[in-house]
Amino acid sequence: MLFRPVPKLKRGAEVAVIAPAGPFDKASFDKGLERLAERYQPQFTPGIFSSHRYLAGDDARRLAELRAAFAQPAVFCARGGYGVHRLLPSLELSELKPQALIGFSDITALHAVYGLAGFRSLHAPVLTQLGKQAPEIVERLFRLLESNAPAEPLKGQGAIGHGTAEGPLLGGNLSVLTRLIGTPFMPRLDGCVLLLEDVGERPYRLDRMFMHLKLSGVLERVKGFALGELTGCEEKGANYGPLDVLSELIAPLGKPCVFGLPIGHGEVNEPVVLGARVRLDTATRTLESLEGLTE
Image (tube, rainbow, N blue to C red; front, side, top):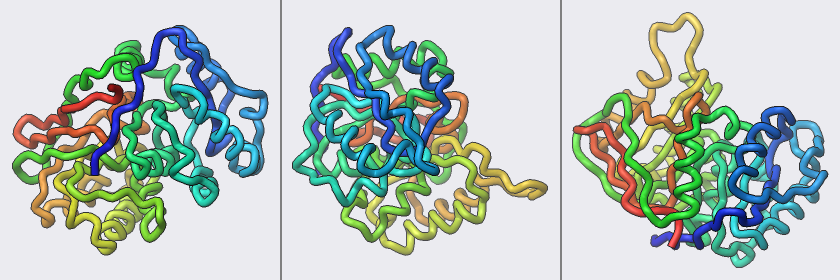
């Protein structure tokens, strides 16, 4: 499947800011908003600060906010958490227009829908994380939005297996991705390099979720794996860690994997383009982008 680039974003452009998932800490949001406002004109309504249990307002509010954001050239998500899955049955792929979608974590489910509609999107910090990122990461995000040049390669900490893999980068948060299996919203992973990251999941849960992917058959069509941060996924007092578990599961598949990429819930969350072709190389432990986000 080919994923189309989206239009470039101009400095000073109006951009939508939405909360399609969980409620958020306002101080962190304001800090990220300040960074965003240095480059663009963020637009949001007071309803974004709503809270309903573990959601940023009820489904009707969040869905209406998302639909209104389709009119803007870019959509920045305030936070992940949980809630996007509840909106998916109400969305039609025909509603989506070529625009930049920016976010990660629970936003993985929204990236999946944009991918099914044939668009590239940006796996990158949400607003509550953006204000904590180093200036060079924020600048990388802006460059991807405003230029069609591919992002600079990312270096991982190590590799599993040997070789290279080329294909569109797909995936995101492991937990969110596995909840799409068996639904019409599961990405088509044929020929892709699969990005996986997670937070707060104990090793046995990572094992269960990865096995869910394997048992569903989708991993047979994946060319390689790009593992990001596994933040807070350790088992207290155990002599093994999350990477030990995933390495044991990935190695028998005979597909190249680079792990420890600076992507996800850690202190560093490097923006990468989902749907863009990448080259994964275990010898150099790199994830190289071959395409950008925009046309």
